[in-house]
Image (cartoon, rainbow, N blue to C red; front, side, top):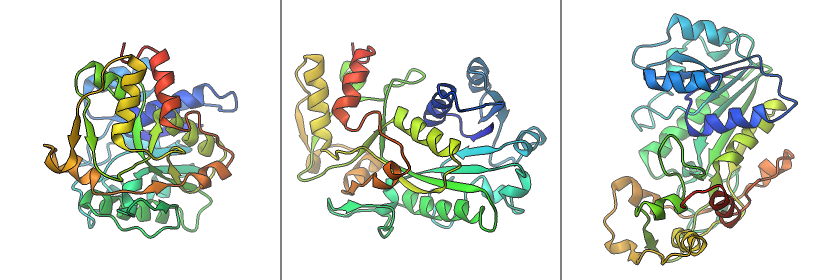
Length: 303
């Protein structure tokens, strides 16, 4: 496997870790894009060859050379402007098509979001549900999904679109990524909105599911979500219980001071099915938030 990562952040890190732990993965090389010199050093320490990428400056000669040998390509790069009419920032630089630049590719994956479904007022959605994005960001994801799928038409390349729920997991590069750490840092809020629920997904399950699909060259569209959609305040309360502390006071959604992005999150309510992912043979490491938070506590998060 010659792996190329467009975007070398949180999810990509755990994808590589999952592959390294799998004896079936025969990794010959790993290349990841970065935008800053300090990011390059972090990748080198993890055995990843860094290559600089700036969507405004185009594809460098070094990036093109690395992409030529890639067999497995993963993109976690978000749309640039949040406009539904904006072409994917990577694919717009490849008018000849990705297969032209990566002639050895066997598997590509684009990391999207369950936000593409929009609001279903708490009903279940699966990969066949109508896409009704509410935000410009999610509408741009719908456009990008179509563009990535179009890259493999008429080829033998498998394309996996991963629609990812709310991500949590171990703190990463100095940033809290879970309710336990947020409580410890005094940043947790127990927001109450009647009947609002959402799915989450542990980052190790993003990495594990992506590694499973990549190793099997398995294409398709998959929701990466846990088994148990739940209210946000319930997760904070459980995290506080694990830590043995009083949960933060309840805050009513209607009167809460929220950023536009945070408020837009609460305007959508749905339950995302993960049956399609499970049908590929992948089993979640953390099927619900309780399992995930317990494991994080055991690893020292929030203490």
